[in-house]
Length: 227
View 1 (spheres, one colour):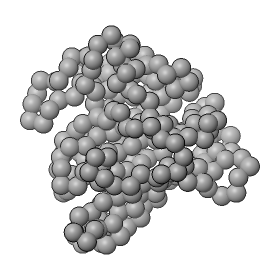
View 2 (cartoon, rainbow, N blue to C red):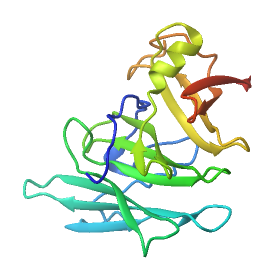
View 3 (cartoon, rainbow, N blue to C red):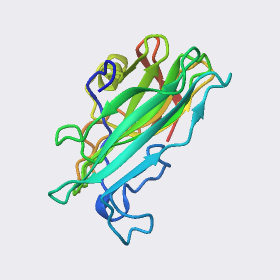
């Protein structure tokens, strides 16, 4: 891993036929679903690399992209390694700022999807797809690259929501939307539900709600519109 990184403390769980077609989503994924299958899903490949579209700041001085490299192991399993690259003023080319290798604990089919730079130019928002081959469990997390500190980190979303609502919550990240004009992260959140169950594990949200995260102040706030 290049540069400091904090442990992923929150991921939203959803269930789908991962091996057949990837995660089934109501909202589009920014982190692409990458496996060892060919584009038409009819053939298997030994190694495949996918590069996400370039994300550029409003002033054109900051750029970023991610690479997801899928490789089939000797045991026949498919796994991915994910990397994030950033270009900033004063440097030549792109610098690798994040590298996550596959693991049983941290996910074997992970993905990254840079979404955009904050209007103030400090933060890069990245959607983290946290998945396992052969399992229906997986979910989304949020990474932030801080162009001031030159680090990639994950906000402890569970702690922020607990601080705001004064209760413990089991959280699903439904969608990572982007930044608002104040450089705050916008998310869609809901209570997590176990596979095959209809009753959520907690009752912190009214269905799927819109929330904001202020990365500079490490705080979370509920937006009035929800459904």
